[in-house]
Amino acid sequence: MSSRHDLSPTPTLSQSHSGIPERLLAKATKAKSLVYETRTTPNSVPRQRGIAIPQGISQHRFFEALDELREELGTQHVELNDKELRSGWYMEHPNTHDMMNIVEQEELVASAVVYPACTEDVVKIVRWANKYRIPIFPISMGRNLGYGGAAPRVRGSVTVDLGRRMNKILNIDPDDHTCLIEPGVSFYALFEEVQKKGYTHIWVDVPDLGGGSIVGNTVDRGVGYTPYGDHWACHSGLEVVLPTGEVIRTGMGALPGNNTWQTFPYGFGPYSDGIFSQSNFGIVTKMGMTLMPNPGGYESFMYTFQKEENLAPLIEIIRPLRITNILENVAQLRHCLQTLAVRGLPRTTYFGGHGPIPQSIIHEELEKMPIGDCTWVYYGMSYGPTHIRKYKLDIIDKEFKKIAGARKIDPTTLPKDEYFWSRDRIAAGIPDLEELLWVNWMPNGSHVAFSPVSPIKGKDAERLYELAKKRHAEAGIDLMPAFCVGLREMHLIVEIVFDSKDAEMRKKAEICLRDMIDDAAALGYGEYRTHLVLMDQVAATYSWNDNALMKFNERLKDSLDPNGILAPGRCGIWPERYRGHGWEMGKGSGAGSEGIGVMPAGETRL
Ligand code: EUG
Image 1 (tube, helix red, strand yellow):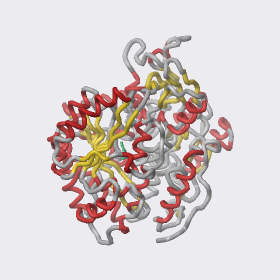
Image 2 (tube, rainbow, N blue to C red):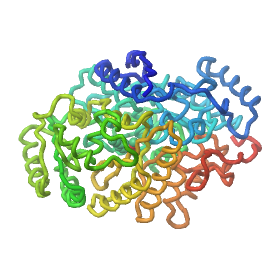
Image 3 (cartoon, rainbow, N blue to C red):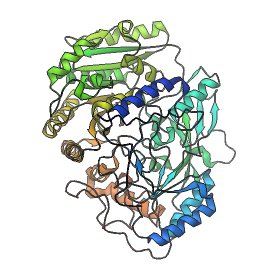
């Protein structure tokens, strides 16, 4: 192991919009040192391929265009990406590429990064991109880890880093329980602000790691773990810069002088918000969000289940409890390997061999841990005052104990640093930093998720688990599945942890992911969200009626973005200019992410 430690302190929220809250600084310092202990390569590596100039424009003209943009935005707000690519870590992540690259690091790389200060700046950038036909790729904060991070899909795109200067909490309404935020507001930042204002009656729903942008997570339809865990369902109102530079406000925001933007999401007429999530149809510059009322008490609980085959009957027990809100939050049902890995120690601590870690070793190690041996762990929370919780917890206990060997773990027996308490904080809307610890399972640890959705049925859970298990065994990869159970569906999240500096392992991980996507589609399952390099493949599985949905998306794309400048290829949607030029990535498309050019620029269609 190399010990090329980068010992600089983690930036805090008072220093940077993407910083760590002071209360988590010690945890960040520890997490950072664990990450760097498993690094085998320097933090940055020299570039092999030079500056990534986007296809369809000469280097000379591209540099001229950048100069023009510098005049409009200020020199310091336009940055050429000619430096070494730094991998950093979660809290000090790059904004020019995917720090958890599954393809070669210089494939998905930005040519430059620009930093708008306001919506008008975003309009200027969009008009500039149209003039020169330069692909631009907006990020809110660039922490979409597992799905591409900050990377653009088209090599050489200009990254529009919205968050660095557009990071204001524009409003928190303590009566309505709503807020209005810009793309650079992280879950950490909103939580701290709510605390600072003394709004103890308001909760923020947070995902496993709190450093992500709320806007970014929500428009990618991410999930959190309170009853408000479906972030997209909880948003109300968007401000969007269209690819041709017009600015719209959706819902009630279209009515001048309204006071209802954050309280009624639909407004009048077609509900347009949907086309600005998981798409490349617009740049969201403001978003309204509903916030949860403090339920007046809460209590986390954890059950363990002994056998692999407990999965299907357990899911059958969970469904009616979840639909009737006895199980109230988006809880997680995890495979025990993740519980072992989240201690943050490298896999070699337990096993020095090749191929998947033997189940017998996992079980021996769990035996030594406070939660004891098991195969599945359910982390849930009950909300409300004691007597209300008791009513629900008694039902849950009776139902869960129908599974032979089910154990309720008494939280008072668990040490303060047990992972359980991190889940407890998250389900109570307190953003944390523990989750990334399992990434240290591998040296230069990186992860990409396979994320299919299904109804909450035992047979669906079993089929998805079995196909993942089979493909992981073939690829020699450790299987770490977790089921996140929504009201009528569940997201299965299978995280593949790999060494991003090991090309062979990356390829194995990619093949495993592509096989699982195909296997799932053959059984009728699709993914709710995916990594940049898998988007074409996933989009192609949504093919009913001769790909009618993609044809519709392409019509929208061509009409809204006639020059094809905004995030080409995101979610598998390619503008006309790129279609038929071999840009799609999939099985057998080779290692490259690029096509063979783009349609020549005719007249600027603006
Ligand atoms: C998780 C991770 C995801 C996701 C939903 C939940 C939780 C991991 C990387 O993507 O989409 C433990």
